[in-house]
Image (cartoon, rainbow, N blue to C red):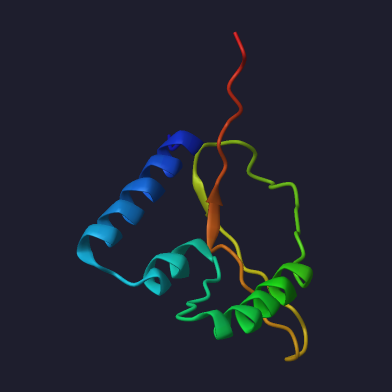
Length: 103
C-alpha cells in the first residue's frame, strides 16, 4: 500500500534527482501540475507576477467521493470540460489511502 508519506518521499527524491541532473524546472513541474515563471531581470517581474495572479484567480477545486473507498490502490481519473475556451490541468489519478487511526 502506498501512503501519503511514501508519495512525499518520492516527490522529494524526484526533485533532488532533477536538481543533480540539471533538469530544468519545467520538467519537474510537468509532473506536479505546477506552473513556473522564469524571470531573468526586474523588468520581467511585473508580467510574471500578473500571470501568476491570473492563474491563482482562475483555479477551481473539484472533489467527489470515490466508489472504490480507501483501498490503497491507484485509480485513474479524467476531467473533461465541454467547450474549448477552458484549459484543464488535473492529476492522472490518485491513491485511495486509508485513514490511519490515531491510536
